[in-house]
Amino acid sequence: MPAPRLPDAAPPHELQEALAFLEAYHAETGAPGLAQRRQEVLRGGHLTLSSAELTHGARMAWRHSTRCVGRLPWASLQVRDLRQVTAAPEVFAHLCDHLRAALNGGRILPILSVFGPGVRLHNDQLIRYAGYRQPDGTVRGDPQNVALTGHLQRLGWAGGPGTPFDVLPLAIETQGQVTLFELPADAVYEVPITHPDCPGLGALGLRWHALPVISNMTLEVAGQAFACAPFNGWYLQTEIAARNLADEGRYNLLPAVAQALGLDTSRRRSLWLDRALVELNVAVLHSFDAAGVRIADHHSVTRQFQHFVELEAQAGRTATGRWSWLIPPLSPATTPVWHEQYDDTELKPNFVVQRPAWREQRSACPFLGK
Image (cartoon, rainbow, N blue to C red; front, side, top):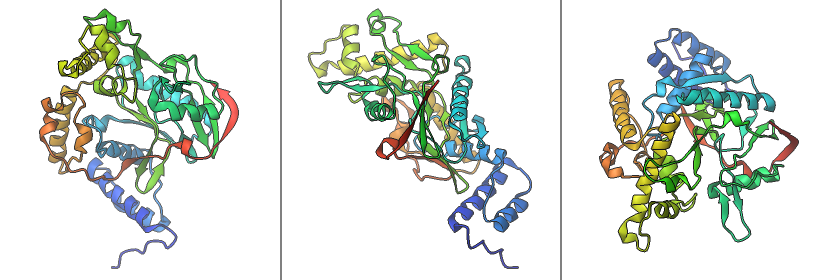
C-alpha cells in the first residue's frame, strides 16, 4: 500500500520534523497511539502538540543543548504550558510566578514556561543588571548590557538609581507592541558576596542574583518555534566568579579582589590574577551556600556530565557537546571533560538564539507596569 501523500499546503520539512518527533516521543515515553498521531498529522498537515508532548520536547531540547554541561537532570525539567497566554500583563505575571517557583526557597527547580504566538522577550535573561555608559567612556554596572540598557531607555525606561547592580525592567513584546515592566523585589533574590577568610572582599559590596533564566532562545519542537520560552537551571559558580565578575569585558573585578587579598599585583608572573580568580570562586560558593541557594561547582558538574554521557549511551543515544563550552574557565585540566572529545552535532528539538531586539525597529507602549 502506498504511503499517504503529504498535503501540498504544508511545508514538507515541518511535517517530517513533526513525524520524527512523534517517533522519538513514543519510543522514549512508551506512550501508546503513535499510529493514530501519525495519521492525524498526515491528514491535517500539522501537529498540535499536547502538553505532554510539549513537555517531553522541551526536555529533549535541554538534553540536546551542546553548550550545557549541566544536563544530567534534563528529565526533571518542569514545563509550564502557557500557550494560551498572549497579553503582556498576563505574561509578566506568569514570569514573576516562574521566578518565585524556580527559586523555591533556594532549592532551585529547573522550569521552562512556554507562551503563545506573538510573544517575545527583549531581555536575554529575566534578571540582568544595567550597564550605564559614562561620559569618560567607562561603564557603571555590567558592560555586557550597555546595548540592552540603551534599548530599554529608548523604550521609555528612566533608568535605575545608578548602582553597579541595578536590575533591568522586562520588555515584553506582544503582537509587535512592547511594554516595559519593573520586576518586583520579591521576584529577584540576590546573594551578597563575602569570603570566609577575607573581610576585605566582602567590603567590596558585590552581589549576584540567584537565578539564571535564559529568555532569548527560541524553543524548536516538532517543526514548531516558540519564541517566548524562558527556562532556568541553577548557576555554576564559574559563570559568576570566573566570567560575570572577572572578565575584563564585564565587571573586571580581579584587580580589586587582589587588592582586598593583599596580593602583589606589580607583575603578572606572581600569578595574582590566578590567585584572585580562585578566591573569588571560593567567595561565590561560600556566599551561595551561606544563603541556602543551590549552586554547582565545576568539579562536581563535570563529573555529573560524565554520568549523563554514560546514561545516554545506555539509552542508545550519543551525548552531543561543544567541548569549548563544556570545559570550565577555571582549572579545566583538573576536570574529566578536558580529556574527552564530543560530537557537536545540533539535534532537534533544541534551542536557537534569537537576534537581539535592539537591532530591530520597535515602538513602545507608554505603560510602565510593575
